[in-house]
Length: 119
Image (cartoon, rainbow, N blue to C red; front, side):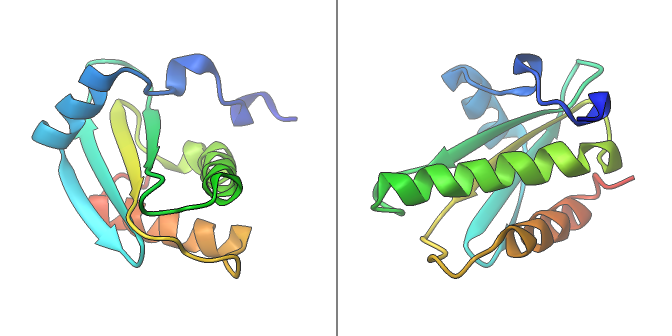
């Protein structure tokens, strides 16, 4: 694995207050089944969080698969993203089993471009 493709704990958003801060002070963009909130942070690194409710995606296995796919998409494309940004991805409805890694990559890149955080 290339060292720049790691996904260390410092890049995870886990605290509820961090999520609330991003929701209240961030900008949102929606594509298909997902919403991306972004806001600048005071850190020299980018961070990402995921929110997938059991109400929007019923099966836990599918929620976990969606998170795994988006973590991998982020890990592979984070060098293309601006530094000092907090992002939260919210899945609003189940994309279904037909979505592949390439589909998630396409949606993520569309959201990042719309947010203006792609280098």
